Every structure is written in C-alpha cells, then in structure tokens.
Image (cartoon, rainbow, N blue to C red; front, top):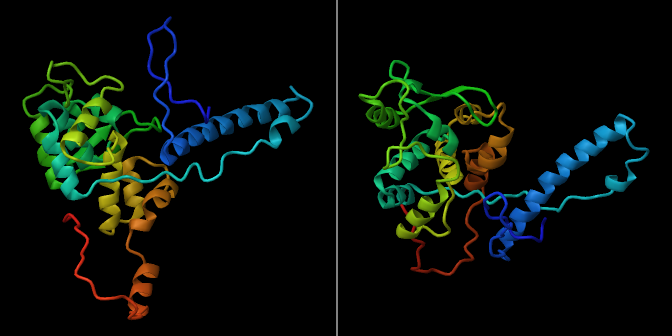
Amino acid sequence: MAETPARLRSKPGTEQRHRQADISPEGVRRRRSTANRVLTILKGALNHAHREGKCASDEAWRTARAFREADAARLRYLSDGEARRLTNACPADFRALVTGALLTGCRYGELAAMTADDFNPDSDTLRVRTSKSRKPRHVVLTQEGRDFVAQRAAGKPGSAHLFLRSNGKPWAKSEQQRPLSAACAKAKIDPCVNFHGLRHTYASRLAMRGVPLAVIAAQLGHADTRMVEKHYGHLAPSYVADTVRVAFVPLGILEPSNVALLVEAR
C-alpha cells in the first residue's frame, strides 16, 4: 500500500487503474500515512478478535510497526492575496463554492448539501446538518460571510441548494478538485491547494488573529481542541514566542544586506 500509487476511480467491471507514481517526499509521506491509518484499523479488529478468543495469540501483528513521521502533514493554507487570486481565477459557479469555504471553513460536502433554509439571518449563523462527525453544528458568520450567504439565499425557497453548478445541478461527490487545480494554475498558486486547504485557510486566519482554539474547534465541528491544537496551535500568539522575541537581543552577527523577502499582505 505504501509503495503502490493511488488508485483512479474506475467504472464497475473495468480494470483498476492507478495514478502516475508520485516519488516526491510528500507523495511518499501521503501513501505511508494512508498505510498507517489502515494498519491502525486492522490491528484494532485483530485485537478485538484476540480478546474474544477467536485467535490464540496476537504475536503475528503485535510487532508490526507503523511508518514513522508519516502523519506529520504539511499544513497548506493561503495568504489573503492568494485567496483573492484564487477566487478571481474560478468560474462563477465554482467561485461561489470556494468563497463559501474561505468564509465559513466548511467542507466541500457540507457546502454542497446546504440549502437556503440552513441560513438564519436573525442569528447570522449557517447550519451544517450533517458533518463528518455526524453531528449538526451552527457556524457563526462574519459580516462578510453573512452578506455573501444572504445573497446566495435571496429569493430561493428553503429547500433550494445554496450552491449549484452552472447547469443548475447540485455539486456531486469528487467534483471539486479538477476545477480547483485549474484555478490554482491560472492564479499561479504553487503548490496547488486542495479543497480542504480552504478550510485550513479559514482556521489559520482565526488562529493568527488570536481567536481561542476552543472557538475554532467549535466553528470547524471538532469535539475538542486536540486536532486544532495539533494543526493551528503554532500559529496562535503565545507567551513563549513573545517572551523569546523580546528577551533574545540581536547578536550582531549578520552582514548588512539590501535583499528582502517579498511577502504578500495578509
């Protein structure tokens, strides 16, 4: 599993095809991370079988070890400038979906399923009926987010989808990455971000502006702050970082230079 390229979606009854092998360090890490997740589930099932007396020993899998440092995903989020370039590069129907992700932090499937009735203009919230955790939640909208969603919901019956394709049909499963890759190429965003990266962008902006991690977890629909601390804790203003930067005076060992890093304004 760690050595085989990812599979391509194939029609039932046809030969299974695979993507071109990605031999980059990130490609190898992703495959090993997938193998680790499967190994965890498999060992859990086998341990259960052992406890239930279905097998005499757990020695066969007890010594199996997961790949090390395979789950340290490189968090990819967009700067404000990149986010603007990306939305401008999208066709109108997909631009609405990308804008929704950047302003709410919702997943692709959550946005695709949303209807006009999910927007509450009285509380300025957006209801997510079914999430990855299978629990509903309400996303608090900023003024910009409220204005955007209100425009999408205006004049629509409650059961109408907020986001539709240009042909009038709802966005279906796995229809997001191809237009997103094309928009990234057009906007000269390298490396290309996936749709989940828009959710990371939303959460990262909150973390860098000092929003408590518990609030970010609630907005994203996490049961606790563990995942948020893992991915965004280093972005939040911290006592340690502020103390080190104030206390560690310059050593004076750098040569003067007129070279400056170009950084887009956030």
